[in-house]
Length: 81
Image (cartoon, rainbow, N blue to C red; front, side, top):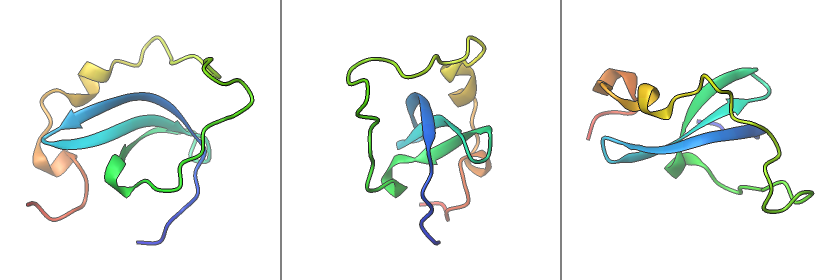
């Protein structure tokens, strides 16, 4: 796969079936997305307001609801290990 630069607003981290995922709002897609941490590289953090929130996580975002009862075919397109 080709690497793509993205600007995201991170909502939460979760370990699902032994794989860490970042749940974040992808600004280009204007949608919530799930990213596998092992696929992320060259991360840059907003340096303008260090150690302060740059945005609010939506009140209706529930990390537990996003991660419970997940089946293998819902976790991504990689071959099972």
